Length: 204
Image (tube, rainbow, N blue to C red; front, side):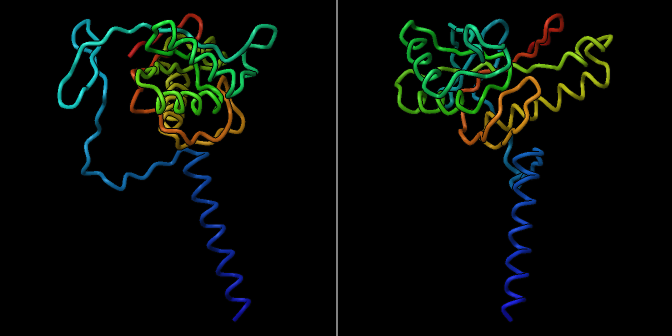
């Protein structure tokens, strides 16, 4: 009896571990509420950017600051800044009257934690413009942005960014991205995305 219990418990643990790996590391998504339509809190209307305030769309002005993943004296993709660094920078950005942060790639998990904490404790939040990066091997090897390898990598990085923004991803080895356990849902204040790596530019 004890042997069966141990085997059953082991099977459950392995099943949960496998499901966790597929969801958080591979980005597998199962829609348990297909009847619920996808909604967004931001949109463009002509040349205006609008946000949803209750049931009303209102025009907003983007007053943004670019935020980097590195600090002076360190390599660009080392993702050196800590939670404390991001917290201090976000405070300073809010103080100068900006309302939007733009990042060029998926940042380290500390950034999203700091942004979540800032936006849940401040009266005036900071919106997020999330960038997507494409590795050089595809960027310089592609004849145009519609080439299969380039599009596949862009879609893969886009899915990863969506999971990160919704706090539903784990990244161990980043390819032009940060790493960590992303568990903070910053999607309510996600204003849009931008893809760009050197000479390729694609705006949404």
